[in-house]
Image (cartoon, rainbow, N blue to C red; front, side):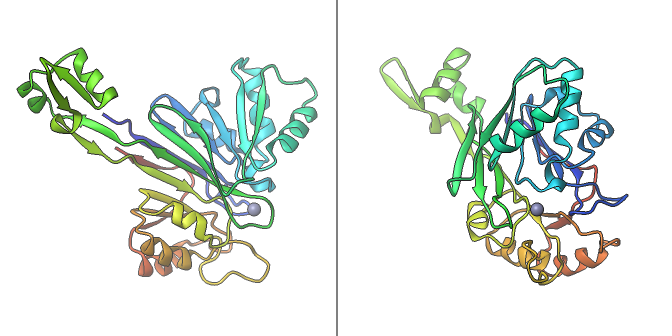
Length: 299
Ligand SMILES: [Zn+2]
C-alpha cells in the first residue's frame, strides 16, 4: 500500500509577513522522509507549532534566494547543530553553493555536520532525488531572480489482488518476485503481474515557488493531484511584479486538469482572503486558499 502524502503549510504569506501569514515554508512528509520546501523567517518556530522535529529533515529545497523564502535557514541549521545533528543535510536551489557557503560562513561557531549545497535550475527540468518509490524534480520558473519550482512524484505501483494470486497458487515470497520482475515462472507457466494485480498511478504534487504564469511548470503539472501555486495577486499583477494572478492560475489549473489547486504566497493586502477565495472559486471550484498551519493529507 502507498504511504499517505502529508503536506503542512508552515508559511503562506508573501514578501512582508503578517501576524496571520508567515513567510514561505511547506513541509512534505512521505513515509519516513521529510522535505522542507522554502524556509522563510521563523520556519523552525512554525515547525515546533506543527510538532515536526527539524532533526527528521532529509533535505531542504529552496525555490530562490529572496529573503522571504530562505531567511529561516541559518537559524534552523544552527538549531540542528545545537541538537547535535550528525547526518549531512542537502540544500537544493538555484546557485545553492553560493548562498549556502555564505550562510555557513556566517555561523560564528561553525556547523557540526555537513551542509551540502546542490545547485539546480540550470536545466529546464532536473531530476534531483530518486528512490524506489518517488522522484523529486526541479522545474525552472519565471521570477525576477533564478528560481525553480519542485515536483514530488510518486512512482506507479501495483496492488496485488490476493484472491487472484491465490487462484494462480501464488503466495509468500513469490509475490515480491513478481512485483520486482513483472512476471514469474511456475511449473513452466509464465504468470504476468497484470494477471494478478492492478496498476495504480503514482501521485504528483507540484510547488511553484514564486513565478509569473509559467507554461513549463503548468505542463509538467498536468493532471497533478495537487498544484501549490503563487497567487500573490487576485487579478492582473502590477507592473514589474513577477508573480502570478490567482484567477489566471485557476483558469489554467482547469485547462491542465489539476485535481486540487492550492493558492499560496498571499499578499498582506488581502487581510480577508474571502476576496481571493471568491474570485478564484468562480473560475475553478477545486481551489483552496492556503492558511498557515493548514495540513493536507492524500491517503
Ligand atoms: Zn521572490
